[in-house]
Structure formats: structure tokens, C-alpha cells
Length: 102
Image (cartoon, rainbow, N blue to C red; front, side, top):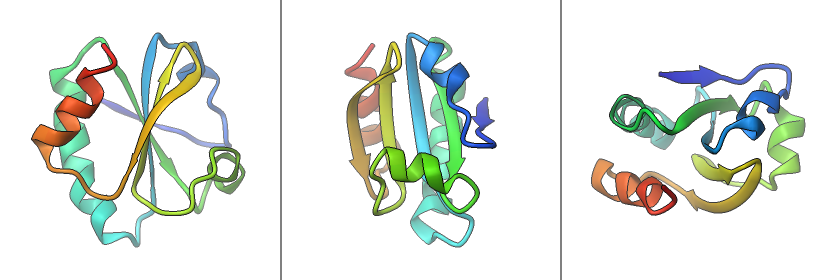
């Protein structure tokens, strides 16, 4: 399951051991392609918390993380950013990207 972030509130995500933040927008084609990949990973990796952040609805949060291109996937470990990737990645590459932080 992917939790949708609202009101720029990352309190829950920052409290998790490992959180994956998907910065995206409804009008973004590559974001729409990445969404089902992340949904599958969320089901496949129960120890990882996944979050969806609409950059139009949460602009201050996107600005805080320096997101200038989407989709942008940020990995937080104990609330601190440890890695990020920008652009669409197919399922095997995205799985490897997240798994290396387990």
C-alpha cells in the first residue's frame, strides 16, 4: 500500500526505518508509468513504507527536497535522505534501487 501525503506532512514517513517517497503529479506521463511499479513494490516489500507526494498539492515539501524534475523517488532511512533517482525506472531497476537500502 502507498500512503498519500497531504498538507506537506512527512511526520509519519520520517519516523519509519525505511521510507520511499514518490514525488509526482497527475499530469506527468512518466509518473503515471511509475505508479504501478511502486504499487507492486509496496506489496512485495512489506518492511518498506511507500508514500506518494503530489508536487502540485505539496509544493513546500517538493521545494524542501529540491525536487526539480519528476518522477523523483527519494529513499529515507530513519528520516534522513540516503538516495534518490529521477525519471521512470522499470520494475527490476526500481526493485534493486530500493532493495540496496534494506
